[in-house]
Amino acid sequence: KQEVTQIPAALSVPEGENLVLNCSFTDSAIYNLQWFRQDPGKGLTSLLLIQSSQREQTSGRLNASLDKSSGRSTLYIAASQPGDSATYLCAVRMDSSYKLIFGSGTRLLVRP
Amino acid sequence: DVKVTQSSRYLVKRTGEKVFLECVQDMDHENMFWYRQDPGLGLRLIYFSYDVKMKEKGDIPEGYSVSREKKERFSLILESASTNQTSMYLCASSFGTPSYEQYFGPGTRLTVT
Image (tube, rainbow over all chains, first blue to last red; front, side, top):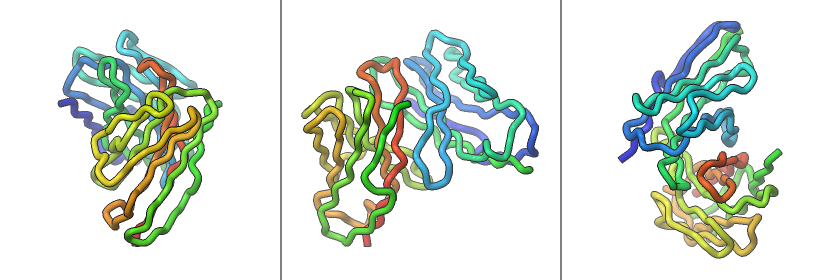
């Protein structure tokens, strides 16, 4: 059974710092992996989708990498800003399945 | 931009009431999903639909039913609301192959008293 883990559960950094959020999964037979952002009391905003054949995806200050063989993905945020404060969730989709399996998230606070 | 909307942001219902949560997407997506999100339990899939009138159970379908009469609309029904169904409910949609992203709505915070 696939399990998705995100460590740490919470992270506090000063503004301007580059940071890395981690996501690990136990079964490497994934179809793709999606990173989301969730603001308190709100829905999920899709940030990046990485297919299993890809190594990384970039969008603005965000860069997500995927290492299927080791069961890991990282989300790199460059030059963090207070507006980046949110919970970041990763989710994996197994082969040919519509279902997403979510991690429990990392709550990020960027201090001004 | 993909738009997924949910009929209510906040809802308060009494135990035993029948509750309808509505979700509408405007991107002609084949797939639609209903999740609930609870502290400590994360997001869990309740039901999903891959076509009009087609549905499949997710991980926690007990106490819920769904309806998809039109491609753009997916309804979650709580036949007889109970206090343990107090939660954040999130709707999502995607195109019909797993290669595509899921897009989420803003969520409905349901409180059952």
